[in-house]
Every structure is written in C-alpha cells, then in structure tokens.
Image (tube, rainbow, N blue to C red; front, side):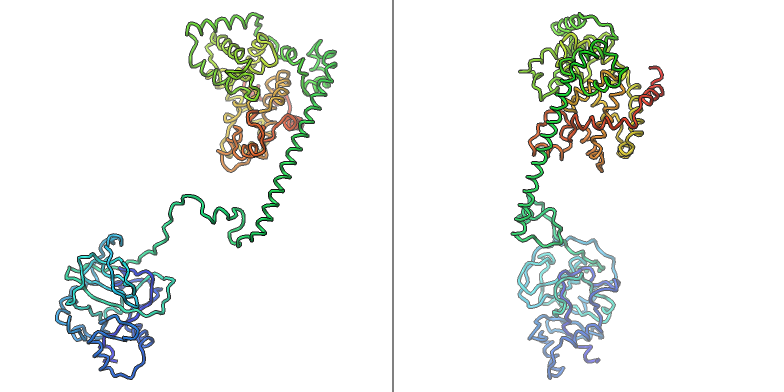
Amino acid sequence: MDTLANIPVSVPIHHVSSFDFDDAFNDSDDTDVPYIFSPDAIREEFARSMPVEDDSWEEIENAASTGGFFDDSNTSVSTLDINSDPQIAPESPMVGSALSAYFSQISLSTPAQEYESPGEHPTAYVNHHPHPNVVVNASEPPPRRVHSTSGLSQPIEGPPSNTTSDISAPPILVTQTAKSLPLVAEPASHSLSTPQSVIVSTLSSDPPGPSVPLTEKPQGHRRNRSAGPTALEKVRSKTRPSFLPPKPRQEDDKHMADWQHMMKLSRTAAEKRRKALQERRLLREKAIEESLHIWETEVIPDWRVVFKKPSLRKLWWRGIPTKLRASMWEKAVGNPLALNKDHYRTCLSRAKRALASGVFPQTTLDLIERDISTTLPALHIFHPESGPLYGDLKDMLSAWVVSRSDEGLGYTFGAAKIAAMMLINLPNQQAFIVMRNLLERHCMRSFFGGDRAKEDVEAYYRIFDTLLADGMPKIYFNFKQHQISPASYLPDWLIPLFLDHLPFEACARVWDVLLLEGDSFLYRASLGILGVLEPRLFFPEKKELLELLKGENKAALDVAKREGRPLDGGRYEIYGVDEETLWERIDHMNDWWKESTWTRLIQRELPDL
C-alpha cells in the first residue's frame, strides 16, 4: 500500500453538468454531497475503474513518466499523489524543477474574493478529448481557479486569454490534506458513472487568490417574452384539465358541434323569451287603454279619490293611459310654487337676453350641451343636428338656469333627462312649471341643491342604508364589505329619475307612481332595482361591483353585443331589467315595506322637515 500511495493516479470523478468553482478548495460543506474527495474514495474508485493487467508497477511508473495512464480509455494526465510527502512525489522531467516554488503559492485558508460573473471571461477553445476534465488553476482568484473542459472542441468559459498554458509550468500535487476537501457539484441529469480525469495545473505565475466554497446556483431557463400565442396554444383547449392528454380530432370535432348546437338553442330560447316579454307588455298596454273609461269617469273628475279607494290606487299603479298622462302628472305634482302661465315665457326671455349679451356663463352652456347629448339617445328626438325637440329642450334648460339664478344655484348635470321626459308628455309651458314644482320636493331639491344641501343628502343616504339593511340584509352586508355607500350609485339614479338606467316604458310607469306617492317611492323603486340586480351583486372585487352598478359590466355588454341587442337604451337593459321584472320585485316588497317606517326615518334624520 505504501508503494501504491506514492504513485500518481488518474482519479475519475462523477460526470456533472455544472461545476461549482469555489467549492474546489472548501473544507466545510454539506454532508449530503454526491461525491467525497478523499483517499478512501479515490482508492475505491481506482479499484473499480482500473483495468486489470499483468504488468508490474514498474511499467506503470514508466507510463507515468511518459504521461500515459490507461491509454485505452483516458488520455488525460493527472499527478495526484496519495498519502505521501509532496517533495518525494514522482515528477515529470519537464516540470520537476519548479514544483516546490509553484506548490508553495497555494492557499486553502484565505478569505473569499467577490464572485465574478461567468460572462466576464472570454471564450477559449480546447482540443478534442474523449472525457470532460476539471482543471484547477491555483494562480487565479477563486472564480477563475477551477473550470471544466469538454471532450469536444467547443467554446467554454475560462480564464482570460492572456493567461496561456506554459509547458514548463509544473502540475500541482494534491497531498493528503485534500482528504478533508469534499468536491461539491449540483446534481445533474447526466450519467454519473462515466469516469473522468482531474487535471490540476497552474497556468501562470500570478499571485494566488483565496479559496472559498461557493455553491453555484443552477442556471434556469431564461423565459423570453412571447410575441403571441404559440401554435400549440392556438389549438389547445382552455378548459380541459392540463393533466389529461389532448383530445382526439374526432372527439374534438364532436364536442365543437355539440357546443355550437347548445349555443344555437340558447339563442333560440333567448329570442323566445324576448318575444314572450314583448307580448306581455303589449297585453298590459292594451289593458291600460281598455281601462280608459274608468279613468274618465272616476279619476279625472277628482283625482284625489285614488287615496280613498284602493282599487283606483292600484289602477294608477298599473300605469296611466298615454293620452291622460299630461293632465294626471300636472294634477299629481300640483303648483306649490304658485307659478303663473307666463313664468316660462319670462324666464326664457331673460335667458335669451343673457345669451345675446354674452352674460350667460359659457361653462353652463357647455354642460347643458353635454347633458343633452346623453339624453335618450335611442329616440333621436333630442339630437343636436336632426332632433325636432333639441331647440325646445335647450330653451327649457336655459330658462331653468335663469329661474334658479335668483337663489344662487347653478346647473346640475342630469336635469336634461327630467326636462326631456316632461317635453315628451306635456307642452313647453306646462312641462316647465311641472318640472320646477317637482324639483322643489325636498328629496329632489336636496340632490339638486349643490353644496348647501350636502347635510340633507347625507341624511338621505343614511335613510337608504337603513331601509336596505332591513329589507335586503345580504346586499347591505355585501356593500359594507366592499365599502360601497349609497353615494356611489344613488345620485346616478335619483337625479335623472332612473331615465339613464331603465327602459323608457318602465321609467314612464315609475314616474306615474312617483308623482303620486312622493319621495318614498323613489327609495322603493331604488330598492326594487337592487333586488333585480341581486344575483349579480356578489363580485369579489369592488371595481367589478361598481362597474355593474354603473351599467358597464364587460361580460353583460359582450353578451348583448353577441345577441345583437341595442346598447343605446337604459343601461340596465343588458342585465335583463325591464318593466315586468322591476314591478314584480316592487310588488314583493309589500311584505316588509311600511310607509310608517319611512315617516319615522324622515323624522329621525331630518327633524326640521
């Protein structure tokens, strides 16, 4: 064994795909390394890998002096000396004279230097070799000290080009002190049974750098930014579980045909529902027209009789006949402001003089124009260029601004919707007077009153929250969870009196009852809208919930576009909110809605009213 210890051998190591440079001289590392660099491990690997020959050890020594070990399988040269003093190790004649001078430069205990990126090293080429080798350059800093060479002539990351190999540079002898220095490398998928040679050499006489362990992180695949879907992504199913194999072509075609058939049936069913809804609406309108004689004989002589007879009040709730709507609205609203018939003409003349002299605020004019452009776009009667009622609507709004200027109030966006509804059903002078008296009701005046009515508006928000919590606790707690207050959606409903969000027929029927019942029905209709929307109100994010309340839900808009439904009507038509569904929900509120509750809340929140 002593003779064996003094013989330089070529030590095969496991093949690894990536080599940890700084761990070559480390004497402290994890215990779960794939290979331990020690004399015992070398002997075991040597006994397992060395070919059995009958030659004497003298022949092996001669082969060592000529640089050839195991010529049949490994042509690399190693000068490892096991369990012997480095001064008596066998040497090559070319490098023996300078061995001790180079060996003394190696330091295994100095601190680490900063790791340098492999990308900083230039590319070098090595000659063909059947097996990869590990080369230790003790004269370089730790990041450059150890590198591996492949069997093929290919570029590898190595030391700078100015450190070239010198035939006179002696190889380094690794003595028994190396048995405590484990060789650490990251596990790889390559075979670990292929023997390799370890070449330990110095390439220059530069001062040696310190040696430290550094476990190199495995280089992951660098993801490139995709320019679009790949060919596989274009045909891959987005709903099929990823752990299942792709569908056969025949099965995929069958499923696609089934899906198209189901979509066709869905469109057919939706069309049937729309036709049935239209038929029921026509039947309701026909029933209202047939009740015209009851209106003429019992309601028109004294409209207040509806408060005394529940049957007539129920008749009013079903809707006022179109030809009687103007007179009934005018009587229901009344004239608490005591405005004369010439009031509209007076305000309009003042507005025209202000416009002619340039006194009328331009910002108010711009706001009026923008408000008109969003008023009942599906009817096209208020279009700035071709609408027959555009001029009347603009004159009415200008006169309304002048009438409020005496009180220090300006224009409120949304007033054009109320004025437009009045012009559709009443003549100009009557429409203006009814509009002014309607907006003097306390709830409407609060929302149209600007900053001076801010406290009253907050009180109305609290009233609505209380009613919502009593009648629809699930919606209330869902809104509280998402921190959505009535201020987020209630003004959008009340200021235009639902004309932006409901279909025109449903809105007209709401107005019939609103003018009769007063402010309490504003809240009842608002709760009815939330009741219709309830299945859609449980979104996980606040943004989606607010988009739905504004009538801008993307999924519902896509469905409406796909089905070819118009999008210029009420915003909630895309959610299926129509006259029938809304009034069905309002009628179901009879179980818990009480006018006494409304009166009590008004007295609590607005004691001065």
